[in-house]
Amino acid sequence: MPPTLASLVHHSALKLTVRAGENRLDVPVRWAHVSELADPVPYMEGGELLLITALKLDAEDPEAMQRYVKRLAGAGVVGLGFAVGVNYDDVPEALVAAARQEGLPLLEVPRRTPFLAISKAVSAAIAADQYRAVTAGFAAQRELTRRTLADGPEGLLAALAAQVDGWAALYDASGAVVATAPEWAGRRAARLTADVQRLRERPAPASSVVGGAGNTEHPENADRVELHSLGTSRRPRSALAVGTAAALGTAERYAVHSAIALLTLTTERSRSLHEAGLRIDAAVLRMLLAGEPDHARTVAGDLYGGLLDAPFRMIVAESPAARNRAAAAAAQTAAGDAAPETGGDPLGTLGALVEVVESAAARAGEAVLVVPDGERLVVLATDGGAAVAACVEHASALEAARPASESLAGGDEESLVVGLSAPSGPIAASAAYKQAQQALSVARRRGRVCVEHEHVAAGSVLPLLADDAVRAFADGLLRALRDHDATGRGDLVASVRAWLSRHGQWDAAAADLGVHRHTLRYRMRRVEEILGRSLDDPDVRMELWLALKATAPD
Image: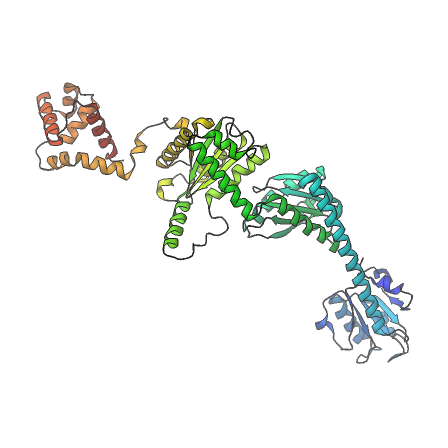
């Protein structure tokens, strides 16, 4: 405990006497300060015991003393010590009355007690309190470390809650509660999800205080809660919440900082270890795609649990923003410049997807393989598991939030595009990867955020033709026929469209055009002559039909 006015009064060597403010002696004293200024307030910080002899004060003037004491109380001075036997034989009644009126403790300091003795007593008490806090902090650190080694983060939270006489909670990257101590704190911790998500938007390390006794809008949240981000990267991967009835003391603060350090060590690998893990992930994926599942299992060991033995889904995702960042980095690297700064999340929307998938897998106890592949992201997740469901749900939420008039083809740089393969096994990983790529391509062409391979064949094939290369091919195939029509020598393009739409039925197609069937036969022979290809060839008919569809006005 820090020194208080009561502890100074009870100090046998000081011989202090209380003359006013007897009911406010339990106030902590931050320092003892001597000042004979008529107005020492500009030099006060609050919490001081001010020691005076009234050298420059008219201590017997009631109005002057009322003004003097009122300013001291307003500045946060916790007590006034008056030395008798120096300038005044006794404490002036005007000063006593003013102190009683303001409720400011007034202590009489005997002539034989120097101010230096009071200052030393306060300083010694403060030092002793700080030593006790540091000692308690080291003891708390040892206990937290022991519990962490024995019981992991859950044990640490329980020890921390006991140290601060409150509760503690750990959150994952998405803001979901991972663990709490005691158990009854789960509901309180769940109310802070939005605050944790806002904390994650700030560069780490970051902290904030929410709630408190002043929270009249939600009295059930009267706890004072400190939120701290965890992790060594700029984008925090988890967060710690500590709830108490009052502000933390020095010892409790040591305990919280120790918990932050220990949780950071247990929840985030070092940079070199993380990079090594990424290299292993990429190597395992390459082996699977190369048709070497046995080698992949050997390299992976128990790293991914049973992921490589059970049916899984391959997920391929990309975003225009990631492609642009990768291209910019490559261009600057080739030019010998430093790589561009990408901020706290170099993958942008892909980084958000990684957090969603990994958080869902962690909560469900699933293994997941996540490999950044240039401007793309490749994920291997258990079929029917929480990670796949979270990916689909995340994509659906993004698509629902997108304005109806906006499409991926419109060039939204932060748009996410995801393709999911059908359920597959390790021996067919390469086929699953191709399926995911095909689904990704279909999603991009259809303006969708996510498409599963099972749904690739759903809907019309026509949106797949909205590609510059397809249009260029169609224009090249039909150019000669359009040039012919432009001379006014016949409507060959319309004739081809009518004939193909009628499956080569001459009478029906001629009726649609309003011409004789012999005229139509002549036009089809001209088409063959101009193209140099036979309309009896089904490939030619298919190419012409697709070219007509690709170039048809919307």
